[in-house]
Image 1: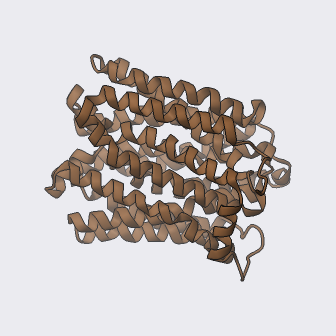
Image 2: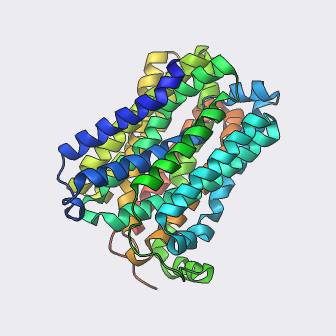
Length: 422
């Protein structure tokens, strides 16, 4: 029964987090008149994103469990993860949908698509339906996130946008803080396919909630951006290309370690499924603190200074982590700090990216989502190979070098308000 109550606890906890966040921070001028309504809009968006992110992230700590349930080698699950991430390559191709049909419609459609993939696994629990569900999740994710980020960008001024976007990023951390333990309990109670049933049903309910609460923010364009215009915008601004490379490197650095950390934790410390789920919740806790810190700090001290400083700390922690295998407590503390700094880097950078080319915000954010998927794909393919080649120590060194390069690119070429056509 615990696993049945966790999704409802997640919604309640999210409501309290958002309420506390906005009670302690000045509301953006654009939403001061109806703060309660906008707060509920953020909650609805974040709940939908929570279920998407739980589906995305559950395969990492539970890759061995899915492999055993499917009767396939764990490397087959790793390949599915890598192929799923390829869906993000096509994110810029889908950006016209947000302009033509509206942000709300695209977000709802993404949740329905994901739910369909999940319920297919429940009806036909095979490796191929599992792979198909992961592919549909990838497509849903690359449609949902740019539309969501553009929706918030349309509603909130840049000076306060870090706060609002950090609230939506709670969905990422809660996917491990609450989602991972729920998935572990569901697998233990009902088998490996059980999480897909709950995620499918809850995603449909989240789409219904968004339909009920979200207005059609902004004007709906019947002409929209064409694919040709999308490509023209991407080619026109060099800052978009610098942002693409930066994002690819950040995600690659994290994925190299994250894709194998479940196997490392299981073999190093002999964790059970339930214990592994709750160990993953430590990462979720660090991320939710990181998201809160990012929302509080970047609007006060500047997006770039915070991201550059914390990004360098993150690179150092990649090197330290492999040397903590002698103690579970030390390993969990290091994982906490690593994912705290990683989350500040990612969340702190989002409001910066929404303002690079304000007139083409959906296009820019679709490129960012594509870059995230490219980075995850590269990391998913190379992570197991690096681990096999030099162990977890080499994984940490490679991740640190990749992350350091990303921070250098940000410091050198990416600045808000510097989107100059060249």
